[in-house]
Length: 204
Image 1 (cartoon, rainbow, N blue to C red):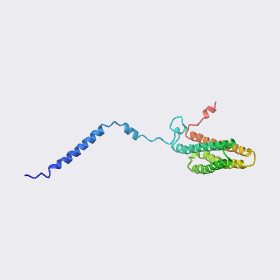
Image 2 (cartoon, rainbow, N blue to C red; image 1 turned 45 degrees about the vertical axis):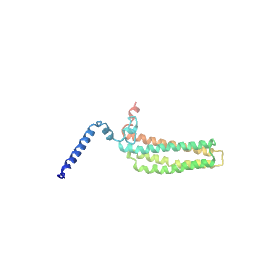
Image 3 (cartoon, one colour; image 1 turned 120 degrees about the horizontal axis):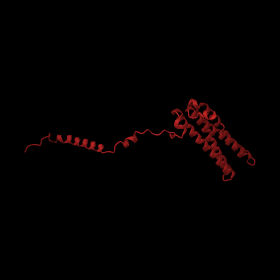
Image 4 (cartoon, one colour; image 1 turned 120 degrees about the vertical axis):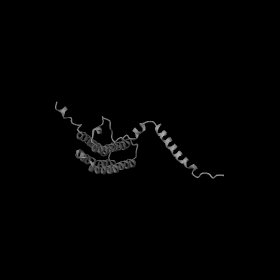
């Protein structure tokens, strides 16, 4: 009986490989055209608004990037203002005890003190057109933690609450000056981009 040809099966492997290539080509050819490719090549949205109505849509990249930090700080400042108001209101309504109120004020004061350092540190990254208004912001921010300390002293004072109420009013004025400083930075950014010139309307 003749022995099997040892070379008999050598043609099978090339046929299998050719079949795999053909199947792969057929599969890829039947895929939906380029819609998926368009999604994967789309640039990720920037970390700031891009709608035409927003101020950052017309800002140069360096200003826009820094304004992300500024807006984050502004949001945090508004949060501190809300916290102090809520703590004071709860004490006025006697919905919170003395120790609880003093602890709450102290916690916000400590957080604001750390936040002030963060705001000051960011001054080194301010683009030249925003440097001066940002320095003003840093100066205004520095008064917030001491203002909260005065509220705590007023809370501890043996009076009818007048000192605390006066300290809260001072705090609110200090916070408004901080918020105004944030707005000045926004205005400076828009002006630096060439979109904030209102001189034509003032000449009438």
